[in-house]
Image 1 (cartoon, rainbow, N blue to C red):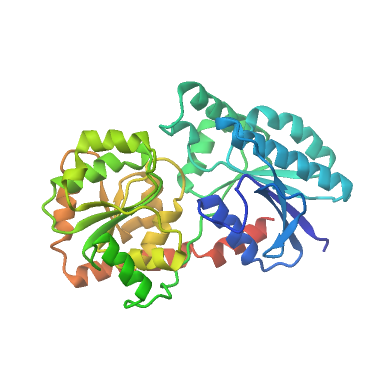
Image 2 (image 1 turned 90 degrees about the vertical axis):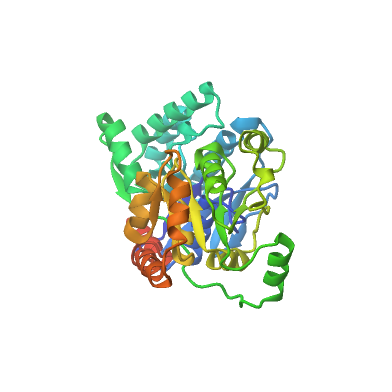
Length: 384
């Protein structure tokens, strides 16, 4: 069997610092089993020379700061560079896998070239980028058009959520899209850090937080993650526990808006603690939380949700198809109705250790069964 060359475009690159796609590419290359598969990964960077990481060839694109068009420029340049490499090396039967649907208006032009090179085009549509609140109307329109054209020209669409897969067929049935569901993975091992770890103790002391005495939120600080509901409902509840929020809010208009609307700074329980990039530390913070709050409403399978289900005993999730398909009965659900979440918070405080353990066991066995990186990588290698 000849080597199969896979060019991955759309992540910021590896090694992964942060972010779903970056972690995915990192794990896909790190856990490679089939030695006939050769990965070529586009990375943002100024160096001219290719580097090897996880046995994958990393090639670099120097991306100028051109605002929202930055990601579009990056994907186009990465695609051009991949095609050039395929031509120069005379690679036959290769595959380009594009993460997210950013370059739809340009894809027809490239698809013709790929066809001549006997190169297939696979895409991962991610979630619903055009629904994100941060985009203006014209940009939302662009994302929707781009998505449509990417779906139209793809040889295969890999969805990390069954709900996204259903949406693709419902919305773009006229193109007869060929789709495949492969989930996202999670690191399900317990943290290597001990409970009395010096670094952890220092963090808890600095943030004035106690083990098993806080609810936790980890995620991008954007409106579609329902921060307003989670914060205001938490403030309504009578819980004595804290709400620890791990996110980046520097120079964020949304943060100021939320502060004015909820007056959360008057509630000592609400604690914005900045970011935590150290994986083992973040895992330990998840393990030590009383419960995890997840408010994501846009997108496919969310990495932070899988990690929470694998590590936090109790998970309270926004009731939407994406979240329910992952957790099933291994979590409790809330909606946007007044008092719904605050009542759920008070209800879970009355749960016995035995009841919490039952929910936690269901969540962990669900993740072990369907969302390990080993399974995900195996599923991908079969398709590649």
